[in-house]
Image: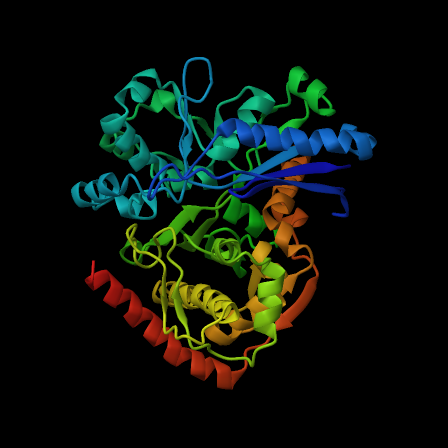
Length: 484
């Protein structure tokens, strides 16, 4: 039977249909537009997500109509943290503030100062991109929005609303709102009170493998699907990616997408808020994750490509033609601030070490290395929390580049696996969650690790050379912070 996975990302909506043998029957993608109406601001129109989903599925009606009509379940994955504010008619009251929006920096700092104990229950200190401080910001700067507010959803859950008519979110996505008691897997009354939000505006909570609702007749008719098929609770994108590669009880991995995460699942809730290491509910009942969340990943390379007017593939080829090892230029990849380990919304991107001889390939190498250095910071935070990293994989769009994965392996000094289809991780994981919801089966029996594509082995001489540059990278951040 076919199952549909939808991933509502920041830069694109991705979709995949797989069968019981996990053969990919159809896949598609539609780009999304990111609006930056001012410094530190990042927004999207929620209806654009729905339009992108419909564009993919309506295209499939032409080429894969029979497969689409046979789909037995839908799973959702999506970018985390953003607040979708709905009025009484279930229409968005304003553009959606996203995970990389920093306007609520003062409100996040205030929550952490007044309620320091909540970080241990909510898995992490408040950050500007989380829904809770965003709503606190709205109460002060757009009070009319709060007066009209009837429901608040996470991004993927607005798509769910259009499919099922239900206001629902799953535990893993709710975990990133700063309203969820992670150990209890329920909304935290203390956190809601701290942000003056009523339980009545919160969506119903379900596990990622549970049925959250059924596809309505109107949505099914419009999209070429069968009415009444179940829609799974789904997951935040990082957790869906974990399910996609079978990382449920163990199995660390790096997700190299628009942003980046270093992710380690387990069966215990182990917070470490002092290092801004996220301890969140997994998409699977009885499981939690530790996650170093980095606001900058493959988006940095896309930014540079646009800046110099050169395709990403060309930049990567130029870097590959250089001798391996640290470049002369150091890049701080904090174009959207940073979370782990700094929790610094004001952190910014910096190129250091440029001369008149610096070319675009030098800048491109520094971007690849700068993201790798930030992942080294993330690995150190996980180690400090007592997490033993053994087998580590890399998924996400950035994992398409074997060159980048090799640089990260050299920087971290550990082997990194790539899986076949790993760049489709969240959508593929969402399809697995759809199957679990439709069949009622234990997700562990449905989610083995995919076949390994290749393994990037670290080169000891380069690891030693990179270790010196990591130290310089960290000093550069401290220097720029002191200069503000």
